[in-house]
Length: 188
Image 1: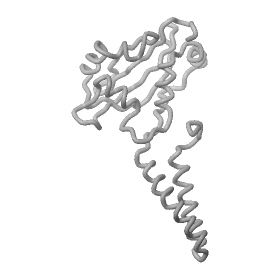
Image 2 (image 1 turned 45 degrees about the horizontal axis):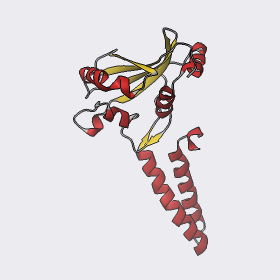
Image 3 (image 1 turned 135 degrees about the horizontal axis):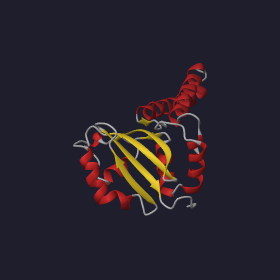
Image 4 (image 1 turned 30 degrees about the vertical axis):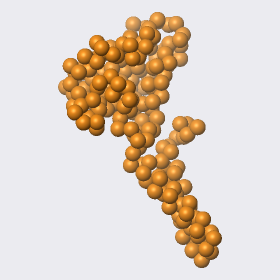
């Protein structure tokens, strides 16, 4: 329901808290209205501030997809690709990084829990005519060798049979994870 909002849910809660608290103060001389405004407003205000603090913003697209790529996405994108794209393009609350659970399962974390790779951006493209979702990670605490070990042991199975996983290292401390739909132009 709230995924379709053009702004973060935390902003809505924060504004509701500010409005209710202000309403409570505005009706200072009316004990009933004052009490209702403050009892509703202050918790909403604190909840909104808390949500803002733990908010994880959507990952930006590195490039706008072409019309051809958009058509390929509609026809070829697998459920996993759709789920990953939906997860990284929405506001999240309480997570250290987008795809946090997946990264931990794949063994892609540094010495500390906060050392998870961060998705810096994503792009959509065609590789050999197949829809591809490419995630660019900043990974200063997780070396590329660790990504390669995870690739050999877990990644192919984790993302399912319908997705081919490809790894690349465009720069030091960066990793490109490409999720390529199998099956060419077949709809899945």
